[in-house]
Amino acid sequence: MKRYIVTLFFAFLLTGCTSSGGISIPQLPSSTPSIAFDSLYLRGVFNWWEATPAYKFKQGSGSWYVDVELIADGQPYDFKLSDANWSPSQSCGAKYKGQPVMIEATVYLICQQNADNLQFTPSSTGIYRFNISAASAGEVTLIITKR
Image 1: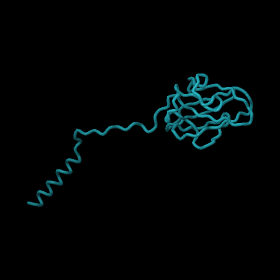
Image 2 (image 1 turned 60 degrees about the horizontal axis):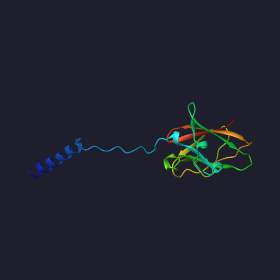
Image 3 (image 1 turned 180 degrees about the horizontal axis):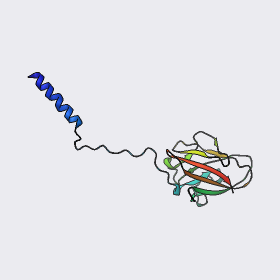
Image 4 (image 1 turned 90 degrees about the horizontal axis):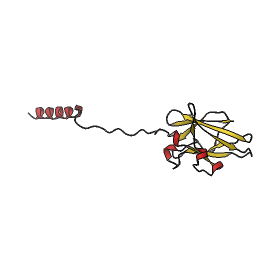
């Protein structure tokens, strides 16, 4: 009789584990929030790190861009991308401190709280276009071209 009760108890436990019941597991939010390109600004030493209308990214064909006049004095310009509030998930920058950006080279930016400043040193004074677009896994690509 004891064996029968023990067997019945374990059978009851197993059926309880396999039933779907009425419990649903909530879905966790995505670990990589989408980037709101329409809210991003180019922020750096050239504009005192402010989110001003002249430095807001505009939508182009397949990417977002902003044109900036830079002076070539041999010093790098530190910069990042961010929204007006410096939201951690919307602040995009370097994977490591002082990551350089070369003209017409694709750079992958991370968008998270601990993203570092990027550095660009223009070779000549002029207007430079900062083009950004979505990449995989919450990254953003950046290409700087001279206009």
